[in-house]
Length: 207
Image (cartoon, rainbow, N blue to C red; front, side, top):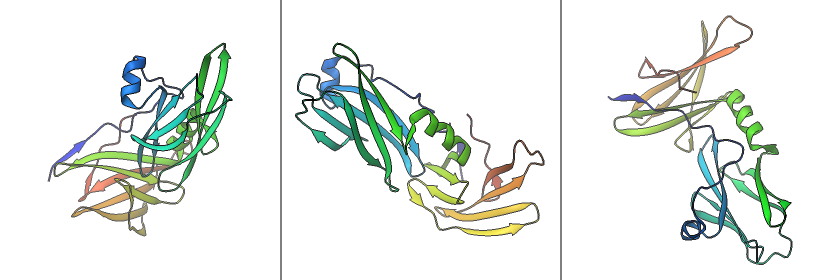
C-alpha cells in the first residue's frame, strides 16, 4: 500500500480573473471574463463566466459544462443564479458597472460572499487528499453532521464512542479508514480530527 499526502484544496481568493487574451478566452468558452474555484464536500468546482458587453450575453460554465445561457440581455448589470454540486448549493454571480463599459464580477455561495463561504467551510469541514495504491482520494468531513465524502460520494459510515472521543469508520477502496474526534484539552482549539488509514495516521493537511 502506498500512502502519499497531497496538498489540501487550494484556497481561492474571493475574486479571480482568468488571465488570458480575449482571443484565448473565446477559444475556451467565449468572452470569459471571470473564473472562480469553489470547494464543496463532493468536489472542487471551476466556475467560468462569459459576459458579452455588446449583446449582454451571459453564459455560466461549471467544470467546462454550460449550465446557464442568456444570449440577449438589454441590461448589462444584474445577477445570475445557478446550483452547484450534489447538494444543490446556491451560487450567484453579481455583475456591477464600475465606470463606462468596465464591469466587476463577484460570486456569492450559499448566501455568503465567496471569501466568507471559504472561511466558514474552513471551520465546519476538514479535508484530506491522499494517494492510495496509485489513486488520489479527497476525503471531506462535515464536522456538524459527521458526514464523510470521498471523491464526490457520500460514504456509508459507522460511528462509535471510545475512551478518548468518537470514531467514524468507512472504507476507501479495500482499505479501512477511521476519523477520530478527540478533545485537545484546550477550549480554544476544541475538537481535533485525524484520519487513520489501515490504522496509520495520515499527516495533517497543509493549509
